Length: 84
Image (cartoon, rainbow, N blue to C red):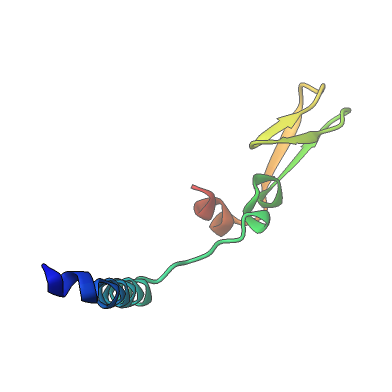
């Protein structure tokens, strides 16, 4: 018991270093892919137009218009797959 009282700082430091080493090895082995949220918004992927009315993007994949006739065109199929 006396040994642990004298050496507890060293033991804690060794445990922290080993934990940091294990965390570093784990993080290096797992690749993280970052996707830009701004470039894959739904309004960048599709083209929404209306006949006789204005179309407004409200966010959260929602468009608003007063027109009953709208046209939806797809700009890039690959970006739509990435949104899922």
